[in-house]
Image (tube, rainbow, N blue to C red; front, side, top):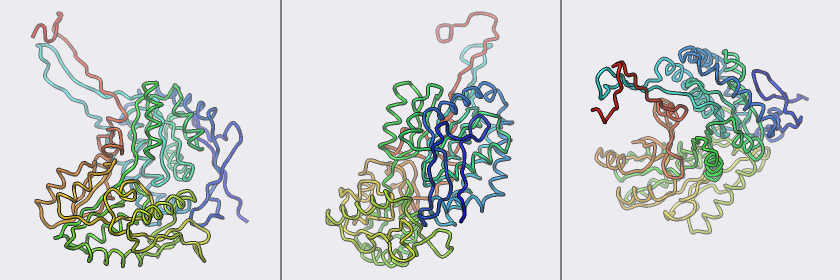
Length: 496
């Protein structure tokens, strides 16, 4: 019998146990009997030690030239690339997504590490002519201090990379608490950064539960900003706690994303995009395509093709190369998806396929659910308004582009949307009028690239962005500098 490995927190450059000695198990959602690892159940005491270490490291780290900080990130990128397959396999074991997608998740971390390493030689500010003679004006970026990062389980390398790497290149120090369902991937990521040469205390990892470690991290006086990705309900809590002590907060929360399928769409392509958007990562993406508004002229044909494809998808353990849809993350999420299927039936939506957990035979050991398609969904039904985070898609008939856009914008969220059409005019109207942070033409709602801003509107976020150069604004402050070499007092607008 294999004894599961015990993993420790990383605090002030050392791998340490929790002060209480408490631990928790990380289990494979495709095989509940498999313990992937044992992790530290951190509490306020552990969080305080990590925050203190980060605060002590900050004064020296902020003065390390940004190109030198970036060289460490570059070395980490190389190590991530070398270990990509091992990292992906461990990710599939702890999170469940199919191996192909896990490789993509790690690749996103690699891409972000190389990209942010490049920013170490940029971090551009502005120089501008001053209003007065013999005066120079410019702006520079300043780091914030200790950044608390709280990350979800669905992208356990990609999302930590979106937060850790720009925070570090800007000169901040970090305490990260990954989701309790996927601590192993974050452990690997932090270990690689430590091996790449980060000084003691610059990056700190505490594992544990949100109610204990997460809350303690929010309350830490040494923390100057909190970057959180997760549910809107928890994001509201983060915002409220940060507001009380004037901490900066960056929130990435829910989505209820839509694909608009027009009457002139390439239906095969639109179905491809819907299957990928709705059932990729078992629907456990904030950008998942959980709604499709389809023009009535092609509605019936679209549904037939979509149902055929959904029923043909192979569900199972993500390490099996033939599997296309892995398990849900845990029993709670399985229960949530079941509840929403019942909600849809009670609301009068028509269940065309799926709708049930898979619990027999090979499925008995995991949290598996059938790919599910609802038809004849009204825009105001709960299944068309609320984030389900599972393999459930709601298909809504529409009369044309204007009504499709109205349906698309008629939810509390605004993360991602897409249109399938051969009409460039329709594409540009939808591009302009869909109020989402991300928009695709003839592609699904998932597939963002790291060199463009990632984030959404309304209840999806609080105005900040991840990825691209936009994320540097999340992890730095602007300082405007005026150098007067006139040798006399010049009173700006008064003397101008």
